[in-house]
Amino acid sequence: MEIRTVDYHTGGEPFRIVPEPPVAIRGRTVAERRMFAIDDPDVDGLRRLLCFEPRGHADMYGGFIVPPNDDGARFGVLFWHKDGFSTACGHGTIALGVWAVRSGLVDAPDDGVTDVPIDVPSGRVVARVHTAGGNVTAVDFVSVPSYHIATRTIGGMFVDISFGGAIYAQLDVATVGLTVTPGRHQTLIAFGRKVKRALADDPVSKHPIDERLSGVYGTILYETLSPLHQRNVTIFADGELDRSPCGSGTAARVATLTAAGVMRPGDTLVHDSIVGSRFTATATPGPGGTVIPIVTGMAYPTGEHRFTVDPGDPMTPGFVLR
Image (cartoon, rainbow, N blue to C red):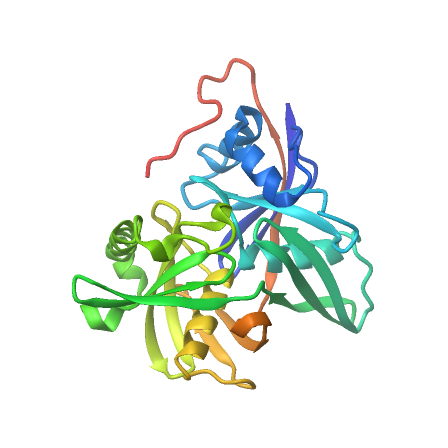
């Protein structure tokens, strides 16, 4: 078997694109294809092969390109990580916008803005690609409608829960004596896991309409540098650490800050990551009191791969040490 990938990073977070997955991924919609992928040994085996060592690592991330739900989108994508298939991914959407234009899949002017609608498991998003002089200079990730769900107290800590394509818990680390710095990353991972476990059976982890979107996906640990300038690290899935400021997590933060009255129409949130990369975010009103976050960042190619599998290799599909 041969698998070709195109690899990008967005703010330091990897995104491995598989334009033509060599397995059947069935379903009428991307959401249905995700449920099929979760249960299908061939699709899940491909995820493990490309994500696990020795071809990947515990923090690898990527996506399988699949057909869109209808002609309103250019393509669909199934996002994956070491623990399975996620419902949303902002940094991946930004990378896909750059890839779609650079690969010629989507035509774009030398100077201008090109919308690339993409179907993801949580709905339809848009990668709004900005070009200047024939080069991609930035991508806006236009998220699904996002909203604040609730505030909970966990062991004396105040935790906000919001939906931004996935459900995120959010905690100000200053309240527990932590800082968002690379040297504290192991402590931050353990803390993020602790918060997620505490909310596992809480009703706030249930999506009100689509059970497939239920579950706290990640914990956003943030520190406030000024009211609209924050640094965060998002611990998602089972202890994965997002190197970028997290696109769908930023959407959740926008929803929380809007609900709290900290962020208003026309405001811009500056969102930094644990490694110093940056997204900016604005929002427009959405249906039913929600907001539509618009998260801006940039992605860059890191290489192309032609992965093969030796039939005698006992390490197939691979392993992870965390």
